[in-house]
Length: 407
Image (cartoon, rainbow, N blue to C red; front, top):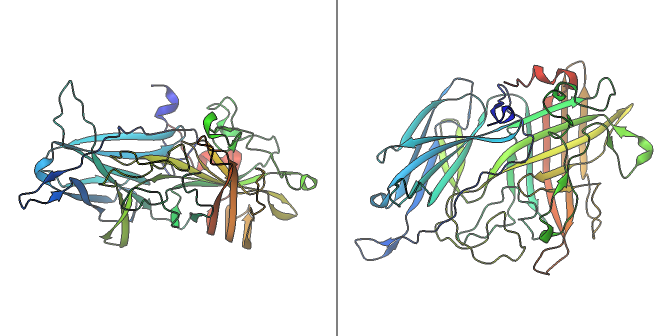
């Protein structure tokens, strides 16, 4: 393992490069119960005692299954964003284990995985079904957004939209509270993120992505450009941007399952027990039925570059899925339909003295034109943002390591 993959961040683990957690895909239909009717094996409940926690606070996970007599092995996976993508820790569990206690050390996504297959040296563990949830950190800083596909293409880009009971990704809104975020500006005007120069040769890969094509049969793809300065493409007369809000989150597919925590009502995601429908990262708008087993996890990001030059000016909103390498933007991708907009800008402020940035936008929309390989396109893959709000640190880029500790 190279040094970069071992980096962690003690305060907010910060999203950077492309990562994909690969989960073997299998499907178990289930077995007839003693009453003679069909019952699927599945994770029927997964919860944590807290929705958000203080550092070093003790958390307890609990879960349960239908058809526990079929269970042959189970594991917990802990997923965390860091400078090189998603880091994963795995804990093996005894068959009768239905709870797990651990200390909270920063925002974390947890998955319980289960299989009905015997696990041997020749046949290693492969999850049949799983469930996942995220625990946030207690703090007064945040980046929050509600996303909704407004072009009937919720898999382009996939931002954590739920599945229905047939496994189809829906266009229902999804609320994302980003777990890793920072606001920063280029204080010395050198066009780079100075403290990251020793760690990234280009110093900028962590913070920028634009799709370089929308052709599905070319695998999509985005090019990483300079984090500073950002060109305000639609209005080059205002110059280049010198500030940014950047945030990352881990999203998962599956169905929402409500649970009660000490501090409110939470929602876990469970894999769809029927094994039908489209997976979130399917490469076709009209993808047909495919098997599904455990959840899949994707790192997503939102970037909001702006220009400080007397009057604060938004330059773009970029919303991307790093697994898909597909990024929807307001200003930088030409669309067939002119529907991309910043929406209603209620407030956007930055305060360098107080190290604080805030924003409140309603009704923004971003997009990219996608040409599917099945010949059904091109289509404008549009992301609506009914709500987008943030309150973050706002620091000189040279001071980022006061917020982020690289180890």
